Image (cartoon, rainbow, N blue to C red; front, top):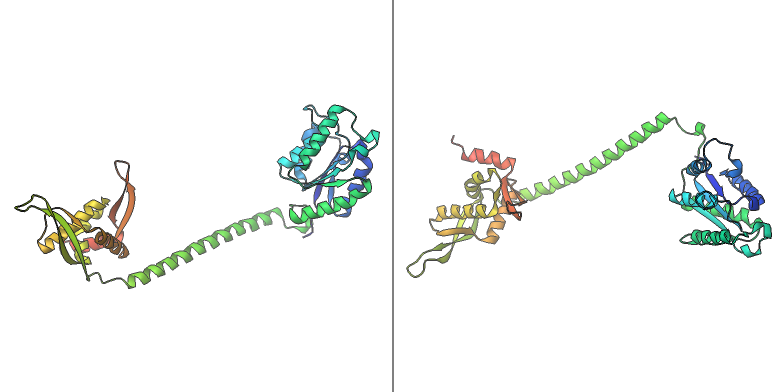
Length: 336
């Protein structure tokens, strides 16, 4: 779709009348829309507000600096520098052409006031800071440098531009297209999420198919303190073999609400004591065996283990039944 770009031409005026005229012709030959002070209509609104509105509508900002600083506004800045500052604040791409030898300009085209000469130099330095600029010495150079600068700007920094109304669809159609685009993006995101979820379920199903039977046996160790005739506190370690069903049958009633892992560990050791008839005080399941039991029951999707904040403000692991775990507990523990 053919676009035309509006270019705001900013410079002093009286010393650059001919240069501005050639620049405007160049821009129009490039199918651009030039905007500058010579094209502004008489307006009731305050001048600076009007200038800002025209800059807001522009796609690019073309700055020409000669040998004059220009007329000052009430704040002590020239309108050219104020226009530049405003364009930069609006992130409008700036194409800057600065006279390379202002000392060679004629008297009437040079700044004679020392204060304004100082302001001009400061303005030149500001424009050159962190920005690529082109220098010109003869008015005949300007059309070519303007054309090259705008072409580079359009390539490197594409702007919105303007299109004839009869070349685009109606506003309602654009709104509808935009809504459809949003819906399409949302569906693409949802489809991607569902794909990942399905993949995760497939991987989970594969893992579950490889799990040991719920009625298979698991051998582990547990420990406790036993009093003897020689000592009141001797740590003893025992071994036990239980099925996963037996372990879950014993501990599941404890897990209807969040239960800290120390209590779960002790409960599994008590279950082992019931099976072997061996035990003492402060029973504990072996640490690594306890981790394996927790992982296995999670793999069966019977329990969930979460890291939560305790009443003391520290973090600890807590066990709780899943919905599948609750159903199996009711099936196993209710009296038929």
